[in-house]
Length: 176
Image 1: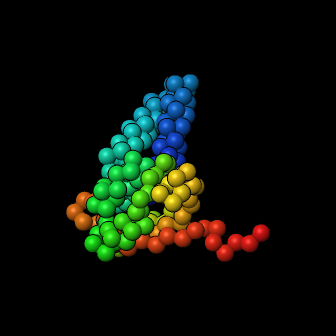
Image 2: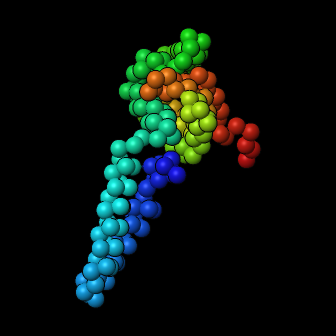
Image 3: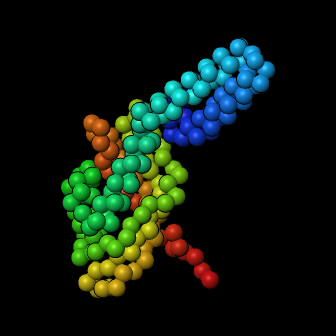
């Protein structure tokens, strides 16, 4: 239950504030103390819900934040930060080979709709689509790149590190 409303508490918070306004409005128009107390109680509970949502960061949120920070680092061409998020020397070497001579002009993550956290809360699988404009020595003008990415992450302390990653071109296999 706590994972549900801390990932997105928009619906319960909006419902709570609307109910509080309705109950307080009815109490003021009818002069009813029980309705006023109910409206104030709903307002307090809703405020507590929003406070909890702001203070508690779920595993899904922290894993997605790690991915967004890696995308921001890519945009800044801070590849050392990205390499620091990789969990093994093999992955670092693989990433260095793929990013060799690359310059990233823009990078953002979209369609992050598949975040699965293991029961022990130590492993995560994050699926998303990444868009970038990049160039290298062979292509000096920025080229748009779109990749479907799957990251297999492991929690190390309070940080998520990438244990394995898969990428594919979402347009691969399409014919006109």
